[in-house]
Structure formats: structure tokens, C-alpha cells
Amino acid sequence: MPVKVRIPTPLRSLTAGQSVVEVTGKDIGEVIEHLEKQYPGIKTRICDEENQIRRFVNIYVNEEDIRFKQGQATVLNEGDEVSIIPAIAGGADGEVRRWPA
Amino acid sequence: MLKIPKQIYDQMLVHAEAEAPNECCGLLAGKNGTAEAIHPMTNIHQSPVSYMIDPKEQFAVFKEMRAKENELIAIYHSHPHTEAYPSATDVRLAYYPEAVYIIVSLENPERPVLKAYRIIHNKISPEEFEVLAS
View 1 (cartoon, each protein chain N blue to C red):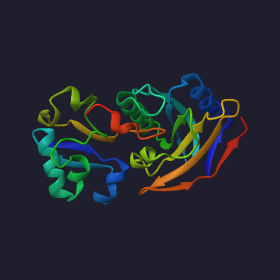
View 2 (view 1 turned 120 degrees about the vertical axis):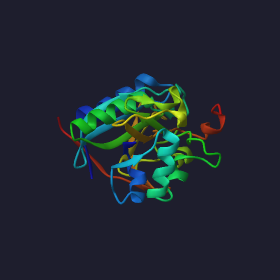
View 3 (view 1 turned 60 degrees about the vertical axis):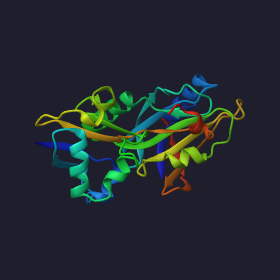
């Protein structure tokens, strides 16, 4: 079913500048696959080599973070709005390597 | 050039000092390169050497910005013990090319230093800013 997907600025070069696109998919995993078909190259920006959502990418269905739902298996209903939002993080030194996996 | 009202500039310094020794973080929203609102955010790392804005707060502020037709003007955070220059981590995690990255250094607690940068494709370039009298 069709859902709206909000595309963050760094990925808009892949969507011809569009900030909102419409794709179909019964769950988040399918939406990512369909995004990749329509906008080749977008998947590797969202998922890592093991097909997991990258740690610094947050995905919301309406108001809810999919990490607190069923991740990529989170089921979508018609009219749902999916938002892809890169985290905002950094810091004074290489602390990242000490973060829990 | 980025324009920051004095009141917002001062609030960033106050936020950095209030969170020390941990890093603070927050967002500036506005239009046409002028900051109009400051959103101090929660650093979920609560760390003196790293930050991550609470994703839930970030989502809410982004939504509010869209509703007000504001843009993300700047992302600020503090370096409590080091200079006001982006670290390798800051560069690697700079996912917002449209925003200016502001760093408040408290290396010398008596004299906080605030500097601004663009970080695009892993390249750091200093960004000039003007503090507007309130």
C-alpha cells in the first residue's frame, strides 16, 4: 500500500531533490526495497552491509521510532507517514568506539 | 553569513556551562540564515566527550520547524575540555549539510569560545557569523 516517506536533506540528491516521496510496501523492509528500486543507491545509505538499519539513522512511522516497534518488520497501514531522520551526534574525541554495539 | 540574536548566542553559552563537564547540544531554527529560536536538547550520552541529541526530541522539533516553516539553521554542541574545532567524530557524523555546526569551547572556563563551521563531504570550512543586538 502507498505510504509517504520523508527524505532527509543528505539523501535528496538521490530523489531528485524531493523531500517527500510515495512508495508502496507492507512493512518498513519492503518500503526500503521499493525506495531502492525507485532511487538506486538509497538503501546503502539507510542500511549497513548486514541489511540492518544504520545506527545513526532513525526511522519513524508517524510518531513512533521503529526501534521501539518491530524494526524493519513494522507493518504499515495506508496513509502512514514514514520519516527517515539521521541522528545528530558527535563529540570532542573518538568516543564512538566505546559506545555499546 | 549566519546571524544569531544576542539572546540566543548567550543561551548557547549558558547551556554549555550548565551541562559542563558534559557536552551540551541543541538546535537553532530560523529562516534565511538568521536564527529565530533555540532548542536546547538532551544529550542522551551524558558524556564529557560525546553527544547524541535525544532522537525523540529531535523528531518533535523537526516537526515543529516544518509547521512554522522554519529551517534548521544550526546544530550546536560544546567541547568542555578542548578547542572549538570539529573533531574527527564531528566530521564523520555531520549528516546535515544545510546546517552550520557551532561548537562552544569551555577549554578556558573563564572565556568560552564559540565558533561556527560548515561540514560538507568531510570538509570543514569556517563560517562567519554575526551576533545581532537584541
